Every structure is written in C-alpha cells, then in structure tokens.
Picture 1 (tube, rainbow, N blue to C red):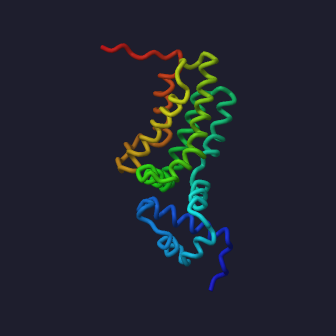
Picture 2: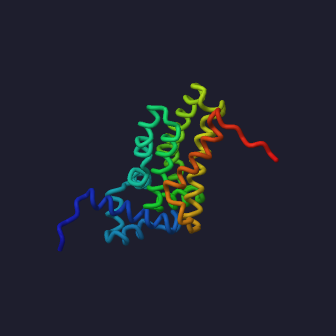
Picture 3: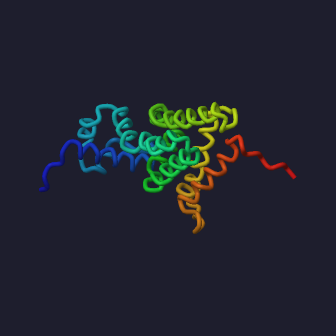
Length: 208
C-alpha cells in the first residue's frame, strides 16, 4: 500500500475528476457517485471534502481560472501606457492557458447552456474582473486622447470576444491552424486589428 494521500492531494484529485467529467458530459450528465468512482473513493468521501455543491464549484474556479495571473502579466505594460503590450499580454496568456487545458472552456460552455450556477459564479468572480481591468485601461486611454470616445466595457468585451472566438474555432470545432498561425502571430494580428479601430490616429477605409 502506498502512503495515505494527504487531504489537500485528495481534494485536488476530486476537483480534477469533477472538471474532467463535467467538461465531457455536462453537469446534468454527471453524478457525485461517478466523480467518486473516478477518484477511487466513496461518495461520502467526496462530501467530506466538499460539503456542498457550491464548495466544489468554487474549488473548480480557483483551480482552473487564472484571471489574476492574466491581469498581472498585463499590469507592467499598463503602467507604462503600452497599448499593444496590454492587449498582447492578455491575449497571449488567454490563448496559451486555454490551449494547454481546454477543460475550463468546455466546462463554462456546458454551464452556460445548462443554465448552471457555475456560469454565474465564474462571471462574478473572474470574468468581470478582467473586463473591468481592460475597460479601465481603455477609459484612461480615451481620457488621455489616445483612444476614441466609446463605451469602454463594450470595447473590452469586443477584444476578449475576438480572442475567445479564435479559441472556439480551433480548440472546440477542431479547425486546423495554418502553419504560419502560431499563438504569437494570431495575437499580434488581433491586437493590430483591435487597436486600429480603437486608437484616434486610425481611420476606417472608405467604402469603394
């Protein structure tokens, strides 16, 4: 027999098993018994570590969502007013993390489609903070005259929507990337397109 797993390690195993099952079968298609079986423990053991479903969902968000890290990578560029640097840092971290582990993206899509409480919990605790960080930066840029006077939150969501759509196409629908479309190349293109419409020096082309 191997040494008994510490409580923290067992807890992590349960979280990982829950994420894997939820992201493949959805919340309605997964039971606590199946989570327990995947870990090799009793169903009672799952409730020992997570007394309520909300405890388990909170643990999943803490384990998988790295919003604070995404913001931290962009803060140095924000401090020096490096517009491209801010959006590049957010886009790169977003794409790289999701490509390494698509389970969170699949989990959140299931939670939204099923009207599951995890979707609202995730938005309140993580997504909103990233939206607000970018919106605050865009608002400051508009006040300084670098950006057009527009709704900062709408603009922030537009940029993240570009990044997320790219992830959906390649990671969920399985469309192969072109050989020249590495993560860095994709992010550079998205940032350039976004800033062209945001910065005051940019002008849309006249329709022909």
